[in-house]
Amino acid sequence: MILYLHGFLSSPASGKARQMQAAMNAMGRGDDFVCPALPVSPRAAADVIFALAQLEVPERLAVVGSSLGGFYATWLAERIGCHAALLNPAIRPYDHLFTEPGERVDYAGNVVQIQPEFSDELRALATGPITQPDRYFLVAATGDQVIDYRDMLEAYAGCRTRLIEGSDHALSDFPVYLPEVLDFCGINPAKA
Image 1 (cartoon, rainbow, N blue to C red):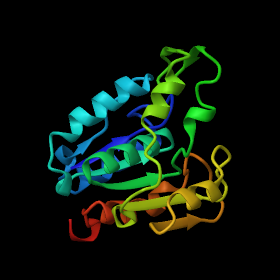
Image 2 (cartoon, helix red, strand yellow):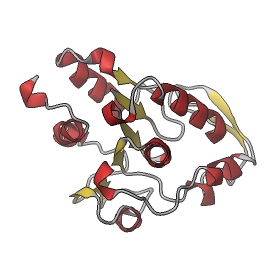
Image 3 (cartoon, one colour):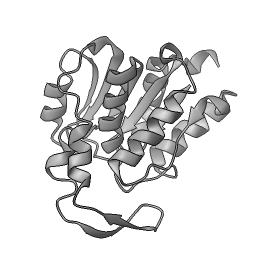
Protein backbone atom coordinates (compact mmCIF):
# COMPACT_ATOMS: atom_id res chain seq x y z
CA MET A 1 0.00 0.00 0.00
CA ILE A 2 1.14 3.54 -0.75
CA LEU A 3 0.04 6.25 1.67
CA TYR A 4 0.49 9.66 0.01
CA LEU A 5 0.76 12.71 2.26
CA HIS A 6 0.23 16.09 0.63
CA GLY A 7 1.84 19.34 1.71
CA PHE A 8 0.65 22.33 3.71
CA LEU A 9 -2.60 23.82 2.36
CA SER A 10 -2.58 21.22 -0.41
CA SER A 11 -5.01 18.35 -0.94
CA PRO A 12 -5.54 14.93 -2.55
CA ALA A 13 -6.32 16.88 -5.74
CA SER A 14 -2.73 18.14 -6.03
CA GLY A 15 -0.86 17.34 -9.23
CA LYS A 16 1.52 14.75 -7.77
CA ALA A 17 -1.25 12.98 -5.85
CA ARG A 18 -3.41 12.75 -8.99
CA GLN A 19 -0.46 11.53 -11.07
CA MET A 20 0.34 8.79 -8.55
CA GLN A 21 -3.31 7.77 -8.35
CA ALA A 22 -3.55 7.61 -12.14
CA ALA A 23 -0.39 5.50 -12.37
CA MET A 24 -1.67 3.10 -9.71
CA ASN A 25 -5.06 2.89 -11.44
CA ALA A 26 -3.37 2.15 -14.78
CA MET A 27 -1.57 -0.79 -13.17
CA GLY A 28 -4.77 -2.12 -11.63
CA ARG A 29 -3.48 -1.16 -8.18
CA GLY A 30 -5.80 1.77 -7.43
CA ASP A 31 -7.04 0.14 -4.23
CA ASP A 32 -3.44 0.12 -2.94
CA PHE A 33 -3.22 3.94 -3.00
CA VAL A 34 -4.54 6.11 -0.18
CA CYS A 35 -4.31 9.90 -0.08
CA PRO A 36 -6.24 11.47 2.79
CA ALA A 37 -7.15 15.12 3.10
CA LEU A 38 -4.94 16.08 6.02
CA PRO A 39 -6.23 18.46 8.68
CA VAL A 40 -4.26 21.67 9.10
CA SER A 41 -3.60 20.84 12.78
CA PRO A 42 -0.40 18.75 12.90
CA ARG A 43 -1.69 16.74 15.86
CA ALA A 44 -4.92 15.92 14.02
CA ALA A 45 -2.97 15.16 10.81
CA ALA A 46 -0.69 12.76 12.72
CA ASP A 47 -3.74 10.98 14.15
CA VAL A 48 -5.20 10.50 10.65
CA ILE A 49 -1.85 9.32 9.25
CA PHE A 50 -1.21 6.86 12.06
CA ALA A 51 -4.73 5.41 11.85
CA LEU A 52 -4.37 4.81 8.09
CA ALA A 53 -0.90 3.30 8.55
CA GLN A 54 -2.44 0.72 10.88
CA LEU A 55 -4.34 -0.72 7.89
CA GLU A 56 -1.13 -2.33 6.59
CA VAL A 57 1.87 -4.02 8.17
CA PRO A 58 4.92 -1.70 8.08
CA GLU A 59 6.84 -4.05 5.77
CA ARG A 60 4.15 -3.67 3.10
CA LEU A 61 3.54 0.05 3.58
CA ALA A 62 5.34 2.82 1.72
CA VAL A 63 4.59 6.42 2.55
CA VAL A 64 5.21 9.18 0.01
CA GLY A 65 5.27 12.71 1.37
CA SER A 66 5.54 16.07 -0.38
CA SER A 67 6.83 19.15 1.48
CA LEU A 68 5.10 19.12 4.89
CA GLY A 69 3.87 15.64 3.95
CA GLY A 70 7.55 14.64 3.78
CA PHE A 71 8.02 15.82 7.37
CA TYR A 72 5.01 13.70 8.37
CA ALA A 73 6.28 10.75 6.32
CA THR A 74 9.59 10.87 8.19
CA TRP A 75 7.75 10.93 11.53
CA LEU A 76 5.71 7.88 10.49
CA ALA A 77 8.68 5.94 9.09
CA GLU A 78 10.67 6.51 12.28
CA ARG A 79 7.68 5.54 14.41
CA ILE A 80 6.63 2.31 12.68
CA GLY A 81 9.56 1.31 10.43
CA CYS A 82 7.98 1.63 6.97
CA HIS A 83 9.71 2.96 3.84
CA ALA A 84 9.33 6.64 2.91
CA ALA A 85 9.82 8.52 -0.35
CA LEU A 86 10.24 12.23 0.32
CA LEU A 87 9.49 14.85 -2.34
CA ASN A 88 11.15 18.17 -1.43
CA PRO A 89 10.41 17.48 2.26
CA ALA A 90 10.03 20.22 4.86
CA ILE A 91 12.99 20.08 7.23
CA ARG A 92 12.14 22.35 10.20
CA PRO A 93 8.60 23.52 9.43
CA TYR A 94 7.92 24.41 13.05
CA ASP A 95 10.36 27.33 12.70
CA HIS A 96 8.37 29.16 10.03
CA LEU A 97 5.16 27.50 8.88
CA PHE A 98 2.69 28.68 11.51
CA THR A 99 4.28 31.97 12.54
CA GLU A 100 1.28 34.02 11.44
CA PRO A 101 -1.98 32.72 12.95
CA GLY A 102 -5.21 33.50 11.17
CA GLU A 103 -7.21 32.45 8.16
CA ARG A 104 -5.68 30.93 5.03
CA VAL A 105 -7.21 29.43 1.91
CA ASP A 106 -6.14 25.90 1.03
CA TYR A 107 -5.61 24.31 -2.40
CA ALA A 108 -9.27 23.30 -2.60
CA GLY A 109 -10.51 26.83 -1.80
CA ASN A 110 -11.49 26.07 1.80
CA VAL A 111 -10.78 28.61 4.52
CA VAL A 112 -8.66 27.10 7.31
CA GLN A 113 -7.71 28.60 10.64
CA ILE A 114 -4.03 28.63 11.63
CA GLN A 115 -3.66 28.39 15.41
CA PRO A 116 -0.60 29.54 17.41
CA GLU A 117 -0.21 26.09 18.99
CA PHE A 118 0.36 24.41 15.60
CA SER A 119 4.10 25.18 15.77
CA ASP A 120 4.34 23.29 19.06
CA GLU A 121 2.30 20.42 17.60
CA LEU A 122 4.79 20.20 14.71
CA ARG A 123 7.78 20.38 17.05
CA ALA A 124 6.34 17.40 18.98
CA LEU A 125 6.52 15.36 15.75
CA ALA A 126 10.18 16.16 15.04
CA THR A 127 12.22 12.97 14.91
CA GLY A 128 15.84 14.09 15.06
CA PRO A 129 18.35 12.25 12.87
CA ILE A 130 16.93 9.36 10.86
CA THR A 131 17.84 5.93 12.19
CA GLN A 132 17.82 3.75 9.06
CA PRO A 133 18.76 5.65 5.88
CA ASP A 134 18.05 2.61 3.68
CA ARG A 135 14.31 3.06 4.38
CA TYR A 136 14.29 6.49 2.69
CA PHE A 137 14.34 7.87 -0.84
CA LEU A 138 14.87 11.63 -1.13
CA VAL A 139 13.81 13.50 -4.25
CA ALA A 140 15.20 17.03 -3.96
CA ALA A 141 15.17 19.84 -6.52
CA THR A 142 17.92 22.46 -6.60
CA GLY A 143 15.31 24.89 -7.96
CA ASP A 144 12.99 24.51 -4.95
CA GLN A 145 12.03 28.08 -4.10
CA VAL A 146 10.61 27.16 -0.65
CA ILE A 147 13.05 24.68 0.91
CA ASP A 148 16.83 24.79 0.42
CA TYR A 149 17.88 21.52 -1.18
CA ARG A 150 21.14 21.57 0.82
CA ASP A 151 19.10 21.31 4.04
CA MET A 152 17.31 18.30 2.56
CA LEU A 153 20.60 16.64 1.61
CA GLU A 154 21.98 17.22 5.09
CA ALA A 155 18.88 15.90 6.88
CA TYR A 156 18.76 12.76 4.72
CA ALA A 157 22.50 12.11 4.33
CA GLY A 158 23.16 8.47 3.47
CA CYS A 159 19.71 7.93 1.95
CA ARG A 160 19.03 6.99 -1.63
CA THR A 161 18.77 10.37 -3.33
CA ARG A 162 17.62 11.77 -6.67
CA LEU A 163 18.97 15.33 -6.88
CA ILE A 164 17.18 17.20 -9.65
CA GLU A 165 18.99 20.12 -11.22
CA GLY A 166 16.43 22.90 -11.45
CA SER A 167 12.72 22.05 -11.23
CA ASP A 168 10.69 23.71 -8.45
CA HIS A 169 9.03 23.09 -5.09
CA ALA A 170 5.98 21.49 -6.71
CA LEU A 171 8.21 19.18 -8.80
CA SER A 172 6.36 20.20 -11.95
CA ASP A 173 8.34 17.52 -13.80
CA PHE A 174 7.26 14.80 -11.35
CA PRO A 175 6.04 12.38 -14.09
CA VAL A 176 9.71 11.90 -15.06
CA TYR A 177 10.55 10.66 -11.53
CA LEU A 178 7.27 8.87 -10.76
CA PRO A 179 8.44 5.43 -12.00
CA GLU A 180 11.50 5.63 -9.73
CA VAL A 181 9.33 6.58 -6.74
CA LEU A 182 6.93 3.72 -7.45
CA ASP A 183 9.85 1.30 -7.80
CA PHE A 184 11.21 2.39 -4.42
CA CYS A 185 7.74 1.76 -2.98
CA GLY A 186 7.87 -1.82 -4.26
CA ILE A 187 5.68 -1.27 -7.29
CA ASN A 188 7.43 -1.90 -10.58
CA PRO A 189 5.56 -0.02 -13.32
CA ALA A 190 7.37 -1.98 -16.05
CA LYS A 191 5.93 -5.28 -14.79
CA ALA A 192 2.38 -4.02 -14.33
